[in-house]
View 1 (cartoon, helix red, strand yellow):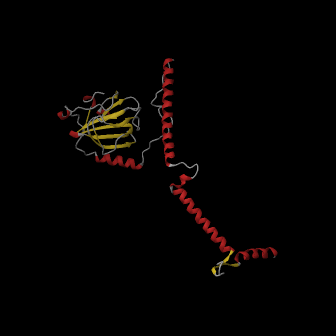
View 2 (cartoon, helix red, strand yellow):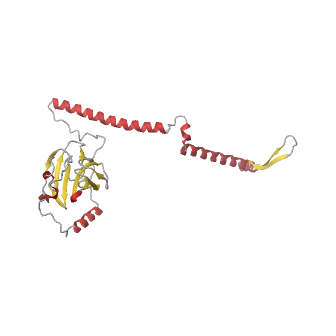
View 3 (cartoon, one colour):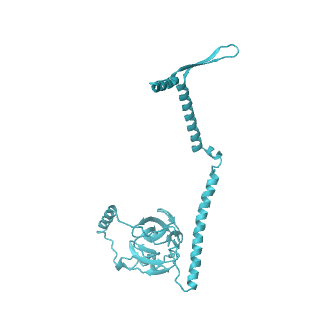
Length: 288
């Protein structure tokens, strides 16, 4: 009973009413008269403190005033940190390339086989565990396109290229070694050119990019529409430098040679040349 009475008396103390009166010192005139309790005072003080904390936190979080807090970096410092991180990453990449270069020199001097620098250029990324799978939507799209093309009247018949492009000067898209030639019997409508790693692929003529995308089989692909109904195709790129709809000049860089897609055995460029929907042998017009 004593415990319950003491608990009640404690709560009753918070509910007891008190009167706060303020008088003018000269005339003893009552200026303010408030009827309060301890509970009201605690509630008012707590609510005021909570609102004050919310305002302070909002100012620190969403205004530049947080920069005045000791130890908090300003916008210029954050920008410098970001730039230094990029420079440090580039420096690490250059150091790795230098170490690989010196190791290959040692192996060549000692008669050993040097490592392929193109495979070790970006040692921080691994692509061995990537698996490309065809979804049901992809298979349905392939079947639909194949069915639409079954009754096309324009079929490659092995006819010779028309003479309207014989005087056209084609710019060499990339310098390298042709490892797989043009062969329509094997559905190989272009040539494969092996070049140095990270070599730049250039546009063979002036034109507009009508396709700049990625496919499972051919990786990063870029296609350019030229005058005289000529179309050039560049497949298996590591990176595309232009977007669909861009106009490019002859010799302008459009991609980086690579090894993307399933139908590839190593870094190279698969280059195709089409005229009036007929595949041409690029070797007949371009010296690689």
